[in-house]
Every structure is written in C-alpha cells, then in structure tokens.
Amino acid sequence: MTQPRILFAIILLTLGAGISARRWFVQPREGAGSGSSLPICSASSEPGASCRLPEAGYPLTIGGVPSAAVSVAFFAAVAIALVLALLGSAALQHRITTIAFRLVAVAVAVDLVLLVLQIAVWRNLCTLCLATYGATLVAAVLLFRPLGTAPAATEPGETRMFMGGWLLATAGLLVAIAGGELWQRQQARVSQLQLTLDDSGRREQYLEDRAVVRFQQAPVVSFDLQGAPRFGAPDAPITVIEFIDYQCPICRQLSGYLDEYLAGTHGRVSWYFKNLPLDRECNPTLPENYHPGACWMARGAVCAHQAGKFVEFYRASFAAERANPGLADVTKLGAGIGLDRTRYAACVTSPRTVEAVARDVADALRSQAQGTPTLFINGRRAPLWTYLERLVAVEEARSGVAKADSAR
Image: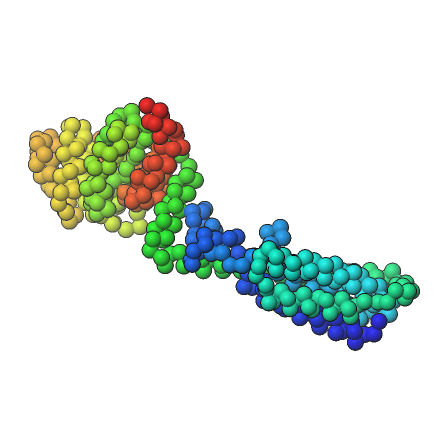
C-alpha cells in the first residue's frame, strides 16, 4: 500500500474525529427531559446535579458515555496508529494498515446499523452522523489491501516501540476525552440550573425540593427538652424545636403564623422553644453583635416560663419592636403580662437564669444552629422555616404518622 493512500486515510479519520467532536460538544447530557421548552433541575445533594434536559433528538450513549465521544476516541486512536506506522518499516505499515482496515470495516457495519435506526426508528437523520459515515467508508476503501498480498514480518523491537507509543498516545487521548466529558457535564448543569432559577415557579419548586433533600440527609440531634416551654400537645409524634431570638424579625414573622399552623396539625406537632440570642453578651462566639439586648429578652422568657406566663411573654415580646432592650424594658414587659415587677427583675438577673440561657446557647452551638429561627423536626435540622409544612409532611411519612392517621 502506498503512503499517499495511508496519509489520505489519516486525513479522513482526523476529519471524522473532528466531526464527531462537534456532535459530542452539542449532544444533550443527563438523559431525556420533561418534554418542555426548559430544563428542570430537581432536588439533589449539590446544586445542578440533577438537571434534566428537554428532549432533543436521540442522545445515544454507550455505558453512559456519549456515542460521539466514543467515535472521537475510535477515529483518533486509528489515526494515531497509522501515523506511527508511517514512521516505521514497510512491514510495520503492512501489519498496522491491515489491522486498521479490519477495525474501520467493523465501524462501517456499525454505521450501517445506525443509519437504518435513524431512518426506521428515530426518524431523524443526523447530518453530522452522515458525514462521519462517509469518512469511515472512504477510509475503509483506502485501507483495503487486495487478497493474496503476503504479510510481512516485523521486528519485535519495532513492534514494542510502536505499541508503547500508541498506548501512551491513546491513554492521553482517553484522559482528555474523559476530562472533556466531565467538564461539559458540569457546564451543562450550570446552564440548566440557571435556566431553572430564572423561571420563578420552577425556581421555587427546585429550592423547596432541595430543602427536602438537605433535611432528609441531616443527622438526627438529640435535645433535653425537660422544662423547655412548649406549644401544642406534649406527646405529639412530631417534635419541632425552635431556636429563637426575641429581637429577630424573622422570628416575629414566624410567630404570626405559628398559631394557625399548630391548629391545623390537630395535635400531631409539639413545638418547643430554646433560646439563641444573637447578642455577644451571652453568645460570645458571634463575630458581631447582631441583636443587642436579645440576651435580656431571653432571660425574661426563662423567668416568664417559670412563672407560667410564657405564652403571654411570647406574644407580648413580638407585639412591638424594641431597640437594644435592657433590664428595665424586660421588667416592664413582665409587669405588663401580670408578673410581680420586683420578683421578675430578680429572676431575670439571677445566675440561675443566666445559666439556663447559656445551656440553650450551648445546645445551639452543639447542633450547629447559627441563625434564628432555626428549626429541628424530630431532631433533623430544617434548612428554612418557610418550608415547614412540606418538611413536617416528609417526616410524618418517614415515621409512619400519616399511615397511622389514615388507619384511624
């Protein structure tokens, strides 16, 4: 076989690799989608890891690897072998071109099957695919050696050098293709996630589903609830613990929703409170003093609970905003809900009360509750309180509460 024919075959194989690379770059990833015009990203352990594309043709994969990437590897590996053969003896060229022809002939047969599938099954001809089929067919013709040509023997040393060079080059090629595929998948996830987040309805669904996944994966933390203030039934199957700051505007927002929510649970939820004032006076681990005076409010809540007036304190504390409340403000609040001013002030400043708040803060640090309100549902941390109903429903289903209710 003349070297020009081998060179022409190398050019065609390189062209086939380039066309396949083009197909590879534009091929959809992560499987078929929802049939809608935009991709949907669903819940997963990391953002964008579970994004589904809209349907787009027939993204054929082989063992999870896009068929186009396999084509790139095939074309390039055969082309590399032929290039290395040209650097060797006539015997080596004879041997390698014979092997290359057999491989390319098999590829022609595979292309024929794919062409039939495109026409009869998928009913969607791929223009780039047809171009690679043509390149493969012509390369096979160029590499064909007439029957009867006697094979030449190659030197063992030359064969070893050829195999070493080919294996090294092919390994580098495969590493590059694997890296390219991983990079393209990551880029596709980023793009798909952005499209999902740009759609308000899908964004909210994605964030809620993600909160559910994070909740289900969260470890279970145990708390000592003896003596903790509580709303709801004491023996409910679902226990919610709220780490609260009485200077926190979001805690105030939650307080306006809590009564209605608990009424709708029909005794299935017990709601406990633990103090987490974002005030460096009693929470020195904070980088800054977010809510000055919150420690005084937390101590006031402890004393109100001891006096049987926690519900009244809870409602009164969020009835009006207070800027940096001190002992006088908390004492006035306690007097307003019917507590003896002198006794209440003494309780608020007592070491026992300070220690009670410190224990709650220690519980918060141990459970990694950093902000307020932080909720734990049956010991699992809720990512956001705004998804409370969904997360409680998930926990009810996991623990069998829903099944028990339906059985009754």
